Length: 252
Image: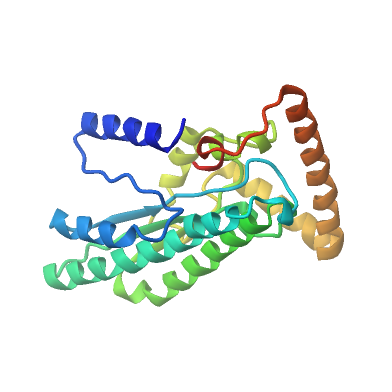
């Protein structure tokens, strides 16, 4: 499914639900003027912003083997998007709170990743971009807590989505429905969350092993595991001739 097919699918679903919608490509930077203008046209309060757009390479890979334009698209999608959407929406939330004189607080949910909590070999740009989201979101939470804006950082581990279809580990991932069900219970209660009990257990165990082994040994351990996984995926793809880098495989 390409970008045009995705737009058609979203348009049909949105019309069925009777909601306002925009279809934009966050791998570009010339979209935010239009987004800001559309939000102004809604002429109503904004209570919740969920920054969930994400992009990653479809298999583990060495950094210099990424396609030449891939890293710029990933930075635009994973880093620029969350930064710009917060910059657009947060002033609106603050102004509506002042103007309406209400205690209703705006909520911003920023979706990071467990890959941003520790270094992940062969996912260099993706891991670094998720680390940015974690730090950026935490800092904003402290800066604007007194203004009544709740900013939550969510760092899931593996969820069964197209984004990570080629790198799922059996028994470690959760369904989107299960993850959302648990994650929604943490909104306004936890400023930082893994989103799901299974993910919390996995991330805490990973941190414990890292502390036990030390950073260098743990990095070497992860390097060997992911390198082996990368080779297995590549060998399987060569046999079935399935290696491709299209929108459906790198966007969620």
